[in-house]
Image 1 (cartoon, rainbow, N blue to C red):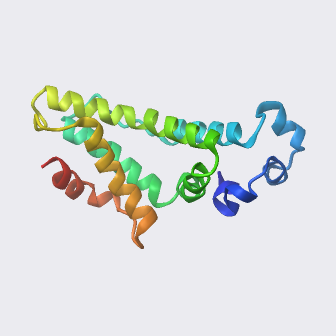
Image 2 (cartoon, one colour; image 1 turned 120 degrees about the vertical axis):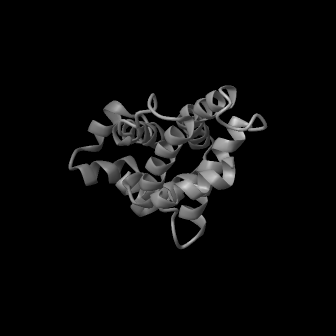
Length: 168
């Protein structure tokens, strides 16, 4: 992820990753047949390892959604994942295999939030008019927009205001 974030997708090679890791490229190729599978594995590993116990079974739906969003805001402010986002978005526009991975990964990563929003709507904790998928996209979209399109990423402390703005 550090290599992808530093050099971008165009200069990202199995050879550059092997050199950075201090191993031969055959070691990398033994596990990953191309750079898309290597990136996919790295993203999945980071996603799994970086997600702390968010206690999604405790508290109100709004509190649990807030925990997810504060975690995302924190990750997007500064992490290996954050630094690789621009390279991944750029590359996904040009590489159909990477685009398929990127869209699938993002859909799977977004699923717990969508399900939580749907449960909140069903339980009457969130407005009946709420579209869970669109609300998840709006909430996460604000975090990623601020990271990619402005000088100041959304700070985790701003999540309560974001929730109020989007969910009411």
